[in-house]
Amino acid sequence: MAKVQLQDVRKVYENGQVAVQGASFEVADGELMVLVGPSGCGKSTLLRMIAGLEEISGGELRIGDRVVNDVAPKDRDIAMVFQSYALYPHMTVAENLAFGLKLRGTAKQEIARRVKEAADMLGLTPMLDKLPKAMSGGQRQRVALGRAMVRESSVFLLDEPLSNLDAKLRHSVRTEIAQLHRKLGTTMIYVTHDQVEAMTLGQRIVVLKDGVVQQIDTPMALYERPANLFVAGFLGSPAMNVLHGRLAEQQGLKLVLGDGRALPLAGAPVQAGWIGRELAVGVRPEHLQPASAGEPAAFETTVEVVEPVGNEIFVNVALDRLPLVMRVAPQSLPPVGGVLPVALRTGSLHFFDAESGSRL
Image (cartoon, rainbow, N blue to C red; front, side, top):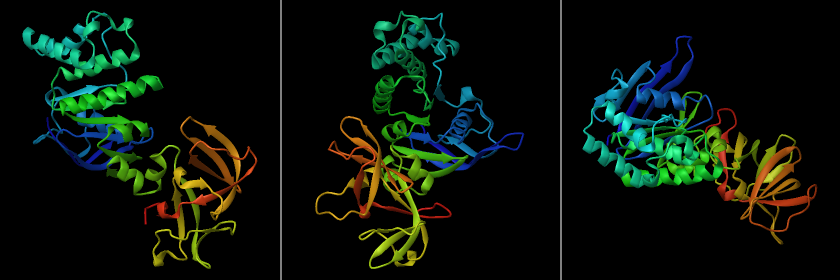
């Protein structure tokens, strides 16, 4: 096992495109760190630089105590699991697991031990004689994980390993990866564009946008205190609602929207210096709720779409033309087109600068 340290790591291609702009963070020994962001944000490029598959344009990369900027991939003591399973179709599971070790000249007894341990841990023992074509997608991905495990490397790198699986298999294999990390205690860096994977797997998460690190923190810290509007909108499903307006003192604290409507914000965690300032106010869907009897409504909305998903309901409403999403417990709701008075949980609001998007 080993820690991974990045200090101002950059990637600039020959055409001048900057894929990664000065990434600096440390992955602790034995930590599972997730790199997350939309397509094109630089997360896979960053992982490939750690693996040695992309040249580093600037900065310093350390694995353990070694600077590895110019070290060949095979000498970095890393194992990588790709989005595609990349299994040899003519080889059995056992042969696929053992192939890399044979190339390295590992002794037969040692190969047999490692293959057995990996197969037992991943539930592949009954399938050792099968060819990949006779296996499901989830089973093939487990073989790919096993092939990385038998290397017994210091660092595991996983590049969107679940993106080719259906929703049920993604959940199953995601759980297996989490259990695998707990058993092995190996340093893992996991790349995904799926914020649910990031939130459920990562001990810490690096959020990237346009090659720039936006925030690094634990999943719940990111959810509860996003550093900017991008992080606030990217993490959370459904996404955070955002209201734009000017903070004013009008017989109590109000947010004055562009159309002149004033929303009451009594009890919101604001500072005196924000009065008169243009703000973006973030509201998680669970902090918008139907106003109960006797409870003052912050505003009235029109129901547009109701999405029951079992243990909760997503209610898409409109405040004039502004679309909002609510997450509520199963209950009776007005029909589509009906009026729904909404209460705002003002103590849980998030405040951002309207221009920069940075958290206040």
